[in-house]
Structures are given as C-alpha cells and as structure tokens.
Length: 266
Image (cartoon, rainbow, N blue to C red; front, side, top):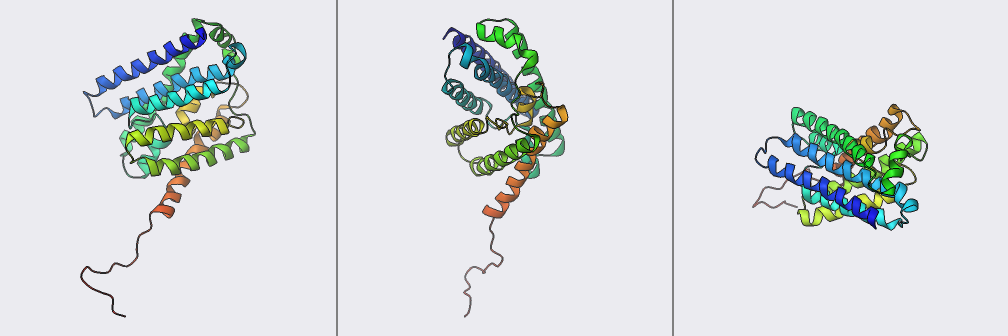
C-alpha cells in the first residue's frame, strides 16, 4: 500500500495544481485556451501514473487488475468535476468547431494548449519517476526508454478499434453534453473507463489525440506517422462520423408546417 500512497500524493498534487490554476483563470475568463492547457495537463499527468500502475503495479506491487481500473474511473470523475467544460481533448475541440460553437482562432489556440499541456505532463511525470520514491517507480524509471506501446494490434486493427470506439463515445457524448454535470460527468467517466478496459488488447481507446501523444507516442514499436494515423486520424474520423450520424438520427424536422389556427381540409 505504500506504493499506492505515493501515487495518491502525486494525484493530489496534480489536482491541486489544476484547481489553483482554475481559480487564477476565473479572473480571466477570456483565456479559454489556458483552461484547456490545464485540463490536458491534469488528464495526461494522472493517466501516466495510472498506466504505470497498470504496467508495473500488477506484478511488482501485487495489485489486482481492478485497482488501476478503479483509479482510472476516479481520475476521470475528478477531471470532469475539476475542469468543467474544458476537456483537454482535441477531438472535442474540433467537434465544437464543426458544430459552429467556436471560431477558428480560439480553436487553434485550444489545440495548441492541449498538446503543450500533454508535453508538460511528460516532463513532470519523468521528473517524478526519476525520484524513485518506491519500487514501482524505480522499475518504471529503468524501463522508461523501453515503455510498452498501447497499440497491441496491427495498424488497420488499431484504426478500426479507435474509430469504432470514437463513434460510440462521441454519439453518446453528443446526447449527454447538455445535461447537468451531476449526471454527465459520472456517465462520461464510466463509459470512458469501460471502453478503455474493453479495448486494452487493441489500442486502449484513448479517443483523445493529446492524451495518446502523452501516453504512447514515445514508445518503440511503431513510427510517429503510424501512431498519428491510429490515435489522431481515427478518433477524428470517428468524431466526424458521430456528428453526421447524430444529425441523421436525432435531427428529424418536419418538411411542412401547418399555420396555427388553420386546419387541413380533407
């Protein structure tokens, strides 16, 4: 349990940083891209530690597979509550742009901030692992150059997995996004956790280009271009298909209107 206590302290530190940054941003509401930076940093930094527990903790720390899964769900819940409408997800940022809810320049700033947040989380996590505060982190630090890729299938299999999971997730997200946070956040966290677990033998269903960049792009096994096709292109394609499918399924409008107060003569 001492190893998990160290991880818990790390999670709390990252969340505290995110919360403090959100308070500062509250005084500058026009800096939406900074909120996306924070959301991306918190998500990737926490998921990196969850990934460490998955890779090392199960055999070095004697942890069961349900432990990292539970931690992941709690991380996603905390992230949703802490970051509000800031998602740290480039696919969702592009979705808002396609739905004409954001302009071009704010969208580009949000995208840049999300990847910068992911890059910073890599630096912070690397420094944290280098401290070797427990056996799990000592092993992680030794194998950091030879990390295990999350792409455990062929290139086409990975594209198919990410695309299908993205279509399902973003279709559901489109239905949930206008619900109160008390309902939306737990449902999104639960679905994301289930998809990640179900696709763990293929791609882990990150559905988030900046998250995937932080978690697996630096691992050997595939080229940067191959990772980009699976973890950047496939989720975006899935998101676009979900938007079109949503319009087809839920946007039924009558073609003819009957004026009020008038009846159709037979």
